Length: 224
Image (tube, rainbow, N blue to C red):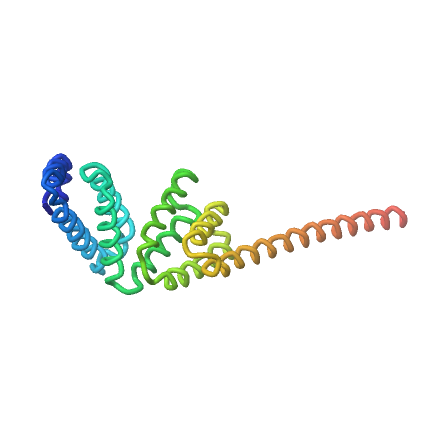
């Protein structure tokens, strides 16, 4: 069965699914599907030499498994549960590192100069990252790295999109609640307040300079 998954032979998988359905023996195929995902996923997560591409590779793998789930396996609910169990198991076999790399992946996408061609594409990428985020147990590890990277993006004005930043925080809030995102939202408010104060100061300085210039002109005219 593994060879069928690896070679994308969806028609063969479809026939196998139909055959086993007819004899009420889908459990074996479901088990094989789950074990295949665990094995392939573990290879991606545990290989330290592939850390740089771990998250994109996991997203590609997830998309491929979703297609198999949708087409040959007709979105069978038991197979959906099998996929979820398998991802949760293998992604947490390596402590902390996947959570850190997912946070770094999001940071890269939210920085200025990333390769996303549009806001819509960036939003889709963030949605995909959230899928992996749901599987990890070390969400506090993700939060720590994400908070540090967010601070750098905001303080150095490196964000590609403020709307995308707020959208990502909203996604995290919907997934984990307000306690998880309070500090992140607070950082955003602090930056906005600081920006507002700087703008007001700049306008005030311009008025003072204009008044000073006007006064100097009047003094010169009076003296002459």
